[in-house]
Length: 488
Image 1 (tube, rainbow, N blue to C red):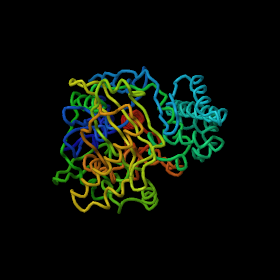
Image 2: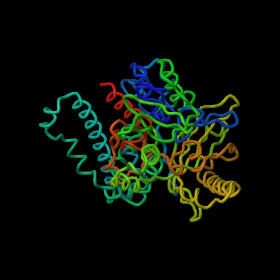
Image 3: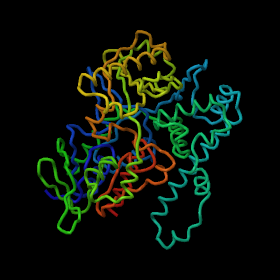
């Protein structure tokens, strides 16, 4: 079969670009190896419950925001969403009171002064800097959008903006270097948020992406009726309604090349070849795009070196059901517990998140408890399925103990339904070693990524390992950018 564009991978990025292209009249085919669309946001169902695959916080659904823009072009409507009107909560082990991340700046600053009196002024100044960086980043994004409409000649004479100066000043700094004048307690508070959203530490994390992550927790976030998988399913419906093709259970083996070495499509594991006249879009990770689709023999030494430096952690998830009366006792339906340091032999992060979803028909609430976990042990030390099961059980017991120790409000009102770990993530998504949330945003990684274009002229990438930002709204924005490029 021959199409204008072939999209490999049905995550949020692949689905979005395929839906937009199909709606614009481009003959598009999306291929995915799984039996359902969504990738990392695919539907998670156990024991009659639908679970969120992570923290359950999603933005971009407000007026004129990214998902509103995208669905305005499509054949299907955007999923129903509800603004989460409560402030996000951070519970720090050893501190008497939970910390609410107030959306109002003045209220947040007063909260910080009360919770961290030992460095009150420094904490406020830190968050003011975070705000300035976020405003500068938003200005930079707007400026780049406007410049894309201008001629190259005009752009060449553009004067640097104030946002360029501010971002350039802080691009080479880590979070810990900017927070050096604050107390260890405040740094632990920031570290908990960075760990939850980006799965890294303040010592390793570049300051600019950390600002975006800290802002996410104070942004207008939404819960999605039916869960985040509903976005993927709505996009898939739009592709089909617009005449596009979706082929599930269709593993792609590699790019197909012609006699002159140009990529002309993809070869499937079945031996079938699917041709693309205009472009091939990879919604695989950057590792798999080059390691599997392109092939390392066609990948430059520079790119191989960058791929070797890219890494991140995986997630250990506990899917649980919580009694309605128990939920009422919790500090919030979305919160972080920070500083819950595990024992040395426990492969869990020092923070974990709790996301409680709306009540199910049986009167209980599905809940997702997420910790970061190093991925290598999940693949190195299990010789059999029995070994993996034992490893998972030990990790569950450790996570369960920490959960009840630091969230005693749960009591007996919560029960385990299922777990997920890097091995199960790998089995369902084929992401390298089950890593999630893109590439760890160290200074080096943050400053060397950012293009949808690959080393193959008509091969493009979209997904969370492409751009130096994160979250499904940012992936969707990248997909819109790519769709515009391919249809300009």
